[in-house]
Image (cartoon, rainbow, N blue to C red):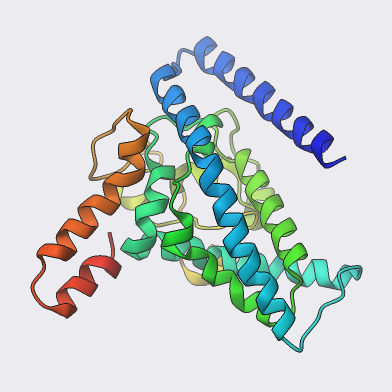
Length: 269
């Protein structure tokens, strides 16, 4: 059953990627084949790292679940409803930290490296999630009693929902955009324009951006530019994965004094 669901999901993604490519070509927006090829290499290279990440992080979460006296029942609707809000809240802060803490940005920057905003670009993910340790943001949820199975299921749904956000083919969605994250919101999150940088961190919801003052709205006078604001593009997937780590660690190595070295690792990118 799980294999069937995975195959159905992969088939759906492939059909939508092809449909979007056709739309971009028909509307003369162009489709960057070289960037798409780089993304595919990133996806393939990420497979063993994702397996390692799942094994290590899963073991940590299971160990934490065994040691907490709290236990939310998996088969109760309230666990899933409260868990959804809790995971969204944690994801917001994980995502925000991934932009504001250089150690975490070293991994997350790969996702923002595409200079064309497409569904396929949503699959641009770094290989170093285990080492950037953003997953620690979710550990308190397990310690508070959220079952690891529920946490992983909700995170999976969160990330799958975000696949649909990475496109220019969908315009504004009216009142839906007040509460939910949409392609309109997420296009600005990926923009390298100064007015849009570090905005719209939400996963499924845009609610926490509204609450914490990180919501951006599109300004008609500013054409959206995608990609990294201060880094040139590259088609080399290994260099994309390693570049921010290499630059950051080099700066930390050359910094004088412990405080300066730590600052080089954790300051804003």
